[in-house]
Image 1 (cartoon, rainbow, N blue to C red):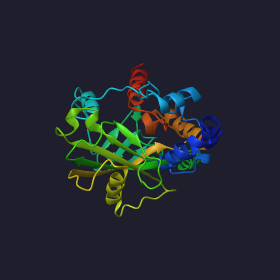
Image 2: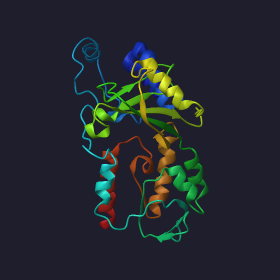
Image 3: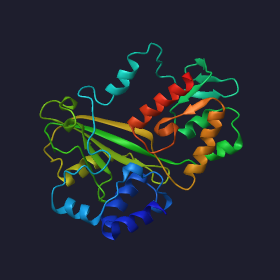
Image 4: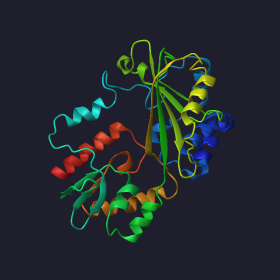
Length: 302
């Protein structure tokens, strides 16, 4: 069953038409008929007519969904998490872009000219990018990696001179808005913005199948936020930052499972453990990446 068919069968034409299909088409950037249901798991909770009616007409504070409750660092943003892991390590090297991976010689070549040898390698790089760096990769593996598709995200961050909402995040399925989601990290931790101000991030999806027109994108986002009522024309923007996430969401089409298995099997046979959202080529979260890192370390240490 395709994801589009599942939406119709499980939620009905109304919810499909007004929310699930337009929202997910913005997020995934491809027709939902091309998606399988393999990715859903905890990310798309099941529901019932009773739950839908209760949510629409009564208390909406039920613990539906995997992220109904969550933990977040009080200070330093989510970056505090990797910084805490790195604090006990003395051999962390950054700004080292991999340009070639010699599987036979078990050697890494970096853009800055440095090299490193390995016995076992743990990688979280996106599988297509990793395979492009491998010298003498078998043709079947290279072809499988070329079949792996993904979406990208342009993340527009804005600092506003007032508190615009008490929400954590809001979804936008409406076609008049180029963004599919806006989040408000100042409501997650008071240290995310100066007192009385807002820290907003707005996400715009794009891919090879839905190219992004960057010209005027930020102004388009600002205009859209005013149209939603979150911002007013009189709001003062105190900070502005655009971040690109070139590989953001793995597309679960009919090639996903067989092709990712071919690539990861080849890597594992050569002493390379590929983990995390992009290394395992899956839809997962930070807690999954941390857990996979622990399992990889335990496996390597015997």
